Length: 516
Image (cartoon, rainbow, N blue to C red; front, side, top):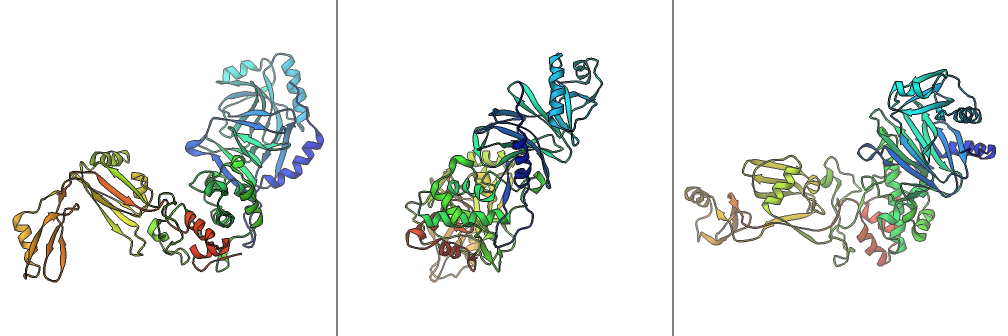
């Protein structure tokens, strides 16, 4: 199959791709970066091969942080497979100045029966022969040609059209980029704007990155985070907050070679399929607007619902609190409609034991769960302790959510079933009670679910703690969904429906900030 290479297309790609392949590292606070790099597959999600389809032909380039070099392009190609290359190849010792020269040599060799294909390595066009599992096989595939044998290269990838290799790329500093000649690309069936870059690190993984216009990225984020059918002011508020979050987190995945990933670890990004006219318009109308505190982009966060009160950053993650991330009342969030504004989850003692064991925590049978709340008044748990027959295990702040799968850290714990029996000895009980005022002292008839004895006196009611084994489920009763820091999306919806504009919404949830 001979691929048609158009000089005009390549010249255009050479100019345009300089802009799509790089991302500014310095930006003005009043603006936003022009492009952003989003990790689609990397580390544990990395793939050995990835299918790419295009609505208007495919071009191949190699790029780094400063330049982009077009390799080849064909308007008739609508699908390629990019594969991690862990094979041996025979390489002709002759290097070629242009792709066309390498293509002609490759075509001539194919007519003689050699499994040849074009390649790019070390700044030169090459011809490789064979996709082999070993050195001897590679040598045999080259017959009597003047070649050198290339062992597996941890930086190398192969691009296939059907069963045939179109191009091999192996370079220590530059990476393969696949771009549409016209239209858009799809990666494993999901459409994206911009181009797709393939990077290999020393681990051997193949990282897949979408290099996309910054606002096009937001068009694939905003309707994933809030419904585009909600009040338009909410959608605009989400656009500004998502833009600000991206700007302040540009270095989050620097070690992988991109800015943010496509999951909720950053912001949920779904590409073209999720785009909506209303959210696209909101992104466009708020172009360049960010949340500022003292003239700089604020570290903003958002979540689904607060259940009536937000938390502080210290509540969720510890460390120092930001003055604009305070715990505030959230009266506009409708608890009857907001997702998980109120919730209850039940676990048997055995289920809690299993969840802890899944985290390699083994403390025997679970006898109790105790919690300590934040002093901010947000009602969020900052310490959860699981008590077992063989010890205890403590989790701080948000960490308990990832152990149990509860919706937020704003919860209380109780137990169902019959009242537990007190384990305090008579002497311990008498000693404890004797320290309280003597007048009209009496022990009430029931024991609380936490194992406490309530002792009533004339002027006070106090609790004496004691170890107790409950008989029923552990009941986690909570409110809200998410970490609870920053903007409640359901609260923002309520504010918009009450007549507030997007800037007012943002400045309410982020105390002391301005949108600019």
